[in-house]
Length: 248
Image (cartoon, rainbow, N blue to C red):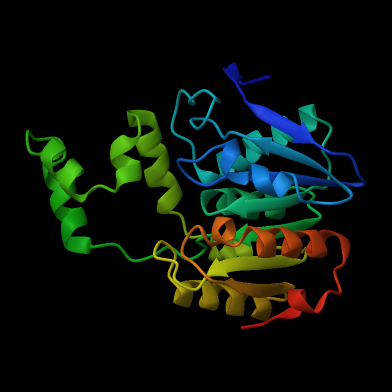
């Protein structure tokens, strides 16, 4: 399929009354979410590669989280997917939040998704802003940049900067559909304290949101596949399951 003149890779599985859309994290692709698609009942499942990942082509210009959400809406409209359950890991969860605030959504599942922008190393940021256009810029980019940043193309590096610098708390507080977090106790990429604060603020804003803790790190959803799939399946088909009411 083509969107905005760019090739898009997607897959669909199953049949059912509920549409589930699986959104991978930064630097990942369809394969990271495929095990979920095979373990849901009463659902048609759509998987995709975001622009710049997997087999989908890169955008011509850097994109922010909201633009990825708008792109997702175009894809789902072409696939006749309406009012989906969105399941997003990390970056995919960011897109799910923006989408759920702007477009009709049935439910949201956030897997290790950052909501509140973490504080960065200010001295390093200031130094890099000064030297990035000098002969020393490449040295400091490789020394201080994350692996995801260093391995990305120029347009995707700019995209990553837009994505990670956006705080989504105010958007998350506007979600009007049931939402659950699956969060690893040892997540090194998303501070559990920031996750706890985001959930608390969302609950105070009236969002029906709960936390499901998992053993593991930022990829706890993969490290606990049975728990992940059974929880999502229960959330979709059995909303009164006691596992889904666990609060902070």
